[in-house]
Length: 58
Length: 401
Ligand SMILES: Cc1cc2nc3c(=O)[nH]c(=O)nc-3n(C[C@H](O)[C@H](O)[C@H](O)COP(=O)(O)OP(=O)(O)OC[C@H]3O[C@@H](n4cnc5c(N)ncnc54)[C@H](O)[C@@H]3O)c2cc1C
Ligand code: SF4
Ligand code: SF4
Picture (cartoon, rainbow over the protein chains, first blue to last red):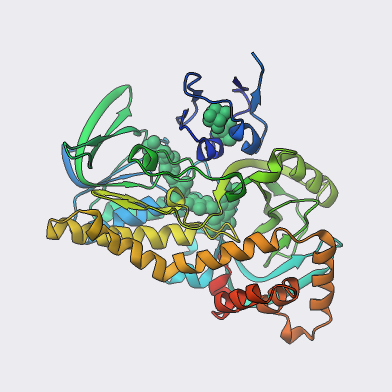
C-alpha cells in the first residue's frame, strides 16, 4: 500500500495527475488515497516532487 | 447564489477566470468554484511569460509585473552561455496578484466567484450528459445545475475524469518541479537563465527567473520518467548548493506541469475542459499561463454563444476545440515532438551545440540556430523547428521557451 507522509505533503496535485484509477482525493490541505481502489502501481510515488509518498509492502 | 447558472467553472486559475470573464461578457450567467481560500495562492509557478503572448490577451499592468526581461541565457552542461537579447522578451509576474486581477475582471463582468468551494462530483441528466455540480463549502454540500460545466481545475484535474474523459498523464508527459524563491541571488536582473543538462535535470531544465532586488525564482522540472530514480528536490538542492551557496530560501514551491499534446477529448455535451486540466501547456517549455488564458477566452466565448443559441451539444462546443487547435494546439503537436528529441540529448551533445552556436557571429545566434545545431542529425525535426519558430522569438518565448 501507499503510505503518505502527511507532514511533507504540499498538496500540489502532481500525484493526482498520473493516478490511473483516480483514487487520490486532494483538498486544500488534506490528501487521502482510497486503498480499496488503489492498484499499488506506484506512479504517484515516482512523480511526487518531494518524496511524500512511499510504497510499503503489507 | 442562485440555483441555476448558464455556466459553472471549476477552478479559478488563469483558465477558469478568463473563461468566466469572457462568458460573462457574452451575456452568460456564470459561477466560479475555487477550492482554496485565496485565489492565486499558493503560487505554483516560476511566473515567466512572453510579452507577445500576454499582450495579445491583456494589457500588461505594473500592478502585477515584478520584472521586465530583456534577454535569456541558455547554459550548457559545461557552463557556456548562449545569450539571446530582445528588449521585449517578457515579464516575471507577481502571479498571486495576476490571478487576482483576472478573477476581478470576471467579477466585474458579472461572474459570481466562491472560494473554499470544493467540487466533489458532477450531476448528469437522464441521457448521461453533465448538467450540474455538487460541491462542499463550510461543511455544507450543495448541488447546482448549469447548462455548461467547465473543468479548469489545473494539473490535479479530476473533473474531466468525472465527466468520463481519460486525462491521466503518462510519466513522460508530466514535468515534476520544485522551486525555491531565493534572496541574495547574484544574477543579471534583466535576464532569465536556463540550464540544460541531462545529468542535472533529466528530461527538463533548470530556471533562474529574477524578480528584482536580488530575489529570484530558482527551480527545476524533470520528466516523471526520471523522477522515479531521484526526486527533483534532490536535484535542486545540489544545483543551489553549487550555484547559490549564499542565498536563502524564502518560499518553496512544488508542482507538476503537463507536457503533453492537448488531451484527445476536451468537450462533451454540456462540458468543456480548459488549461492544464486539458493538457494545454506548451510541451517544450512547460509555459502554461498564456495557453490557459487563450483556451479560457475561447471556451468562454463559445460557451456564451452556445447558451444564447440554446445548443450546448458537443457538436456546437467543438467550435472551441477547433479554435484552440488553430491558435495553439497544432503548434503544441510540433513542440511535443521537439521536446522528445531535445530532452534525449546527452550532455556531450548539449556541450557541442553550445560550442557551435558560440562559433557563430552574435547576430546569427537565434532560437532557430540553436535548434538547428542541436538537431543537426534529425532533418525532419529541423523543419518542425523552423515551422514553429518562424514567428518572432518573443512569441515563442512562452515562457521564455
Ligand atoms: C513549478 C512550476 C513552475 C511553472 N512556471 C511557469 C512559468 O514560468 N510560466 C508559465 O507560463 N507557466 C508556468 N507553470 C505552469 C502554470 O502555472 C500553469 O500552466 C497554469 O497555472 C495553468 O492554469 P490553469 O488555470 O489551467 O490551472 P491552475 O492555475 O492550476 O488553476 C486550477 C485551479 O483549480 C482549483 N481546483 C482544483 N480542483 C478543484 C476542485 N475540485 N474544486 C474547486 N477548485 C478546484 C485549484 O485550487 C486551482 O486554483 C509552472 C508550473 C509549475 C508547477
Ligand atoms: S505530489 Fe506529493 S506533495 Fe504533491 S500532492 Fe501528491 S503527495 Fe502531496
Ligand atoms: S499507487 Fe497507483 S493507483 Fe495507487 S494512488 Fe498511486 S497512482 Fe493511484
